[in-house]
Every structure is written in structure tokens, then in C-alpha cells.
Length: 89
Image (cartoon, rainbow, N blue to C red; front, top):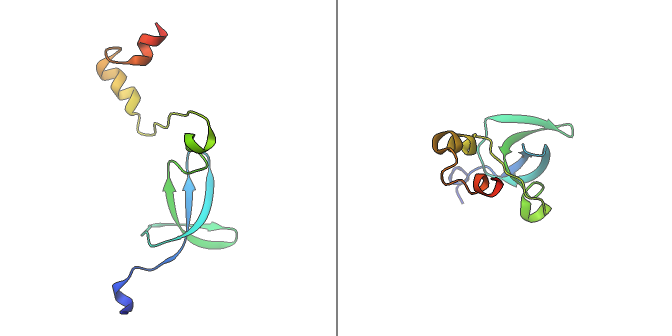
């Protein structure tokens, strides 16, 4: 096999931002950031949901809205089409 034909497969730290959980796994993903984790420098990948914070695995329902999409929708459309506003009222 030609070595330049394949991406580098290395250890990477994935950081779940919603619950501040970090784990190390191997990946070929390209990153710009690095982190010192357990005394060693690793490439860093920031994610919003992992098994540590996903409702299926935790059993807790949680709305992850980092971009403010829900608030934008409510400002744009008000209570029209919003099932939560109808249920509350």
C-alpha cells in the first residue's frame, strides 16, 4: 500500500460540550485544535451530543439548542404553530 494514499489514523479527544465529558478514541478526522488530556497532547474534536448526554442513553429529555433555533422560530412565528404554547395555555 502507498502510505500517502491513506489519512493518518491516530488517537483523538472528543469533547461533549453539553456535559463537559471527554473521551479518547482513534480517528482520521482533521482538527485545528489540540488539548492536553491526562498529560499528553491530542487533537481535539468538539461535539454537542455523545452517549453521555444523549436522551436515549441517559433516559433524560433535554433540548440542546446551541444556535438559538427555537428562540428564532418563536420570534418569527410567535405562538402560531407552536405546540408547547398551546399545551401551556
